[in-house]
Length: 283
Image (cartoon, rainbow, N blue to C red; front, side, top):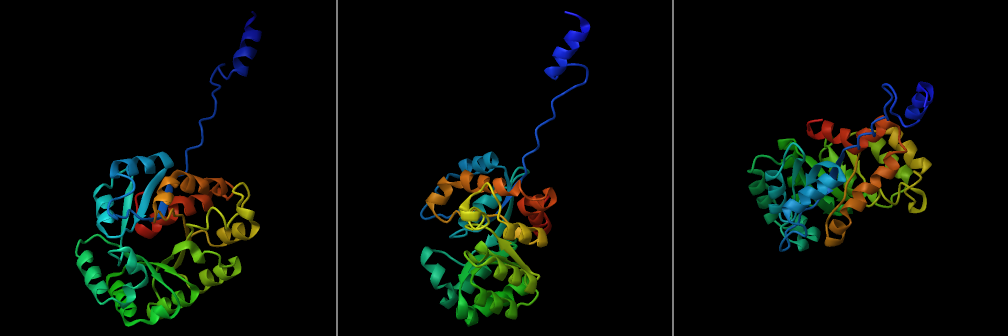
C-alpha cells in the first residue's frame, strides 16, 4: 500500500496526522427548583440513592423544600461540590397543613423555630389561592420574609400572587408551576407586570410548552416567551409523591429535549444560570 493510499485510509478513520473526532458536547447542568424530600413516615428514596439519582440526571443543584423540614435538613447536610442545595423553609409539618396553614397560629412558631437553623434562604413552597392571601397570618409571614430578605415560593393563582405583591412589592417570588394551564399571554402579562416574579416550570415543562405534549417541538409562543424573558424561568421536578420520584430521570431529562431547541445562552440560563444568579451558587 502506497503512503498516499495509507494516508487516505487513515484520514477516513480520523487517525491521520492531528485529525481527531470532535469531543462530545458537555451535558448542560440542571438545577431542580422544586424538590420535595418528604418524610411520611420516611423518604421514598434513601438519601444515598437520591444523591446518585441527581448525579445520573445531571442535576447539580436543588431547591429543597420538604414536609416536614427534616428532609431539607438532611439534603443540606449532604451538600457537596457535586450537588449544591438551596434550602427553603416549608410552613408544613403534615399533609393536612397544605389547606390550613394560613389559619393555624402555630405556623409562625414553626417558621421562627426552623429559621433559627441559620441557613434558609426562602419560605415555601406554600399553597395559597385567591382571598386566602388576605389572611392575617399570611401578612405576618410576608413581613417576616421581608425583614429577613427571604424569597417566597408560592403555589398560587393570579389573584393570590397579586395580593402577595401588594404586601411585598419588591418581593422575589418563585411561581410554582407557572399557573399550570394559564394561557401564555397571561403568563407574559404577569412577568411583565412583576419584575420579581420567577416562573418555575414543573408540570408545565413537559406538556404545556410543547404542542400536544410532543417534546420534540417547542411551541412558537413558548419559544418567544423564553427568548423575551430568559432570566425569569427555572426548571423543577415537584417530587411530592412516590410516582414523581419513580419518574425523576424522565422528568428532568425531558427538559433537555426542548432546551436543545433554544438559543444556547437562553437554554443555559433556564437550565442552570438563573439559579446561579438568584441563589449565589458556584457556577
